Length: 193
Image 1 (cartoon, rainbow, N blue to C red):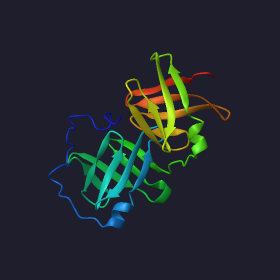
Image 2: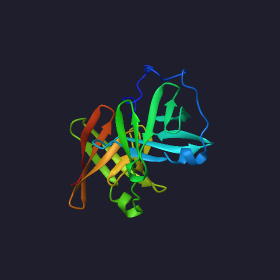
Image 3: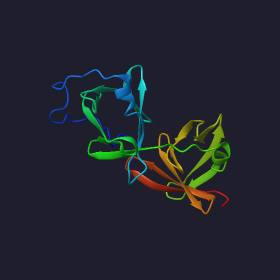
Image 4: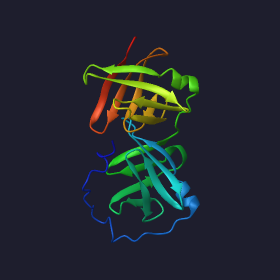
């Protein structure tokens, strides 16, 4: 999922790492960068939140505290630089050359989520996924009983171990596109039309 953004091993860029000491930031300075960020051209997300006095990345597949280098630059795991810039609606984060913009997550209602429940089939993968809603969360039940949950991104996008984008014909949900790292846009058609 985010393995493409933070592959192992991560090479240390010039000027990044132990040569740059951490600084202490106030909670207000940290909260400035809190929020959900999306790539402008594809459904890739990173979320940041303040936890226990530190800015943390809270993205499926990548969790952890960021170490501040200055008021807008942080390190993940001491080696990957995360740089924030801008204000308000123009806030963005730059990670390994990719710029993501701050967005507001959608707030789908229970009926919005219920409209997504059902079985979806991928002719390309010869696989079927069943989406359901339990305890107010959209999820997919996988073979073997495992279930992954998703949280809303922008309208008609859902983040989890993979990102789902909803395909509609008018208001009717007709399918999903699945994105995960280098896998982009795998089509799952809604069973039963």
